[in-house]
Amino acid sequence: MEGKMSQSANSIKQGRAELIALLRALCHWQGQHDLVIATDSAFAMQSINEHLQNPEAHKYNKHKNLFQAIIKQLLTRAQRQQHTSIVKVKSHIQIRGNEIADALAVEATKEWDVDMSGEYTEPFGDMVWVTKPVYDANGEVNGTPYLSNLGPALKTAIHRNKHLGQSNQDTIYFRAWRDTAQHMFADISNGYWEEEGKVPDAMLRNTNKAKTGQLWHKGKAYLWKMPYMRGGPVATDNLCPLCSQPDSGSHILGGCAHPEMKKMVIYRHDEAHKIIINAINKGRKGSCLIIADVGTAATLGNLGVHHKRIPKWVLPNNMLALHTAYPNELRTKLRPDIMMVELQEHERLIYQRAASSTTHSVLPSSIIDPRLGSGRQRKIWIVEGGYCADTRYAENNMKSW
Image (cartoon, rainbow, N blue to C red; front, side, top):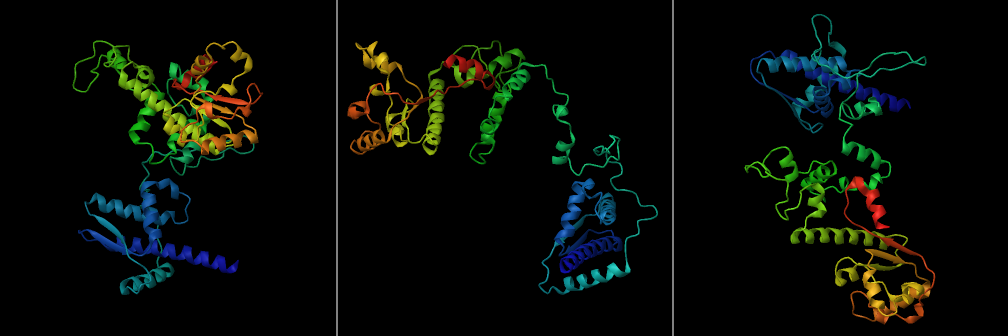
């Protein structure tokens, strides 16, 4: 403990010595030319920079007076149009001038210190800064210290019911997001922010604009009497320029009837479900029989999907009895995006053998062993995905049932 305390005290003493040396150089140099100060103290350079950027962070620092005196000298020189540079040199590599300066800095701590009396004024005295009241056990205010920064400290200081500030809370979007937030999976819904480098900045911006009703479309241009295209005429209607239907944010994302836009919507739908299938394969349901109607047979086979259509043996007997004349028509109509069917161990082996003996990318039901058996009770999970506005998930969920 004694050794650690001694080492810590020496570090503090050395840091103060380096700050005093910098201040002494600034006070000593009274010339009219630019000044370059070389130092091996990363601590001094970093601390001065932090004090310039965030002065309140050092309000309770033991070297506060030194920082303020150095800043005062730097500001005075700047007001005189005199440039000051502080540059870093390597330490302990026998640079003669640097070694002499280190020795003199230690001596300076014994003979010379900073006189803060007299006409000195706080360099940042005219700055407005945020404070936070501190309360004692009786609920009385016991001081109002300054916040150390305007980032995390400010977020902690502000009461949660004030986080929205003066924003308008009587809007459709505010009410919709307020009602939706309590049902959201926050980590999943905001996961795209964590994909650093994978999601382009333009896509992030457009996603947030779409979620808050700020995505630009012809309906807004018509409402606000503005040009729809930059440099173009003022919009005279709210119709989509591609399909001539009323334009809106949801129309852009999933409602436009133009063939190219429909292709984009289908592609987005398929790619999203492929991501879901990959997640299923890596999870506890990865041993299930997977049926999916997204993408082509070739791409689905690479994802571990067994069928594009529901095999006959999966359907209940009573349902098949009602469609004896056209059994394949029933299977064509039943096309869930993703279906997971729980298999017993011997059934998994049947599928493994079938997969190894065929060149098909997904398995046609005709080659599956009949021992799988129709009508057996088994667990089935269905995943249905589709575009909907984030705040209308409940309405779309009801439609899916």
